[in-house]
Length: 163
Image (tube, rainbow, N blue to C red; front, side, top):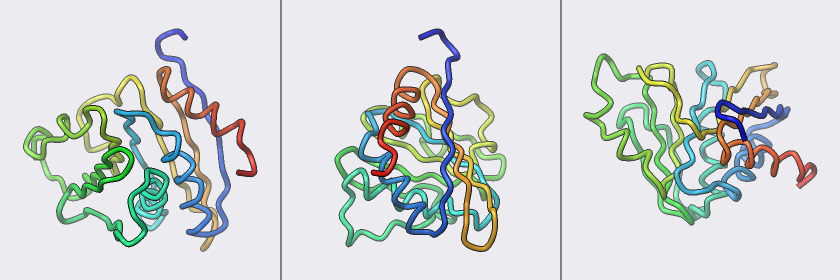
């Protein structure tokens, strides 16, 4: 696969539970070191998406997945470790200060809300997630896979419609 290759898939979600189910499909297929930059307006469902991702990764149902808006990073143990990072409140701080680059190392899966606050490019292999509010309940999820692992994950999702 040529460098810079990408593949995109779009899902429509009609509820928070549907968003979680879509994300859980990603979690079940995630490979070590996957990075998921997640963009969307406030209230678009970024944390809801990470809740589903956590379930797909095998984080136990009794573990409540919350937004790390004030702590910057929440970590969860599942089939692979999940680090949920929220850069919304990061003001001029160095990403090294919160250990972001260490968190992104395999085998962990790293979901990053507000990735545009990073002064670095996305990793070569990633799945970007863009959540758009369609109306009060519906969301459009645009997933773009980059690099071999990201593109393969998108292909796997595309082949399993109706799962």
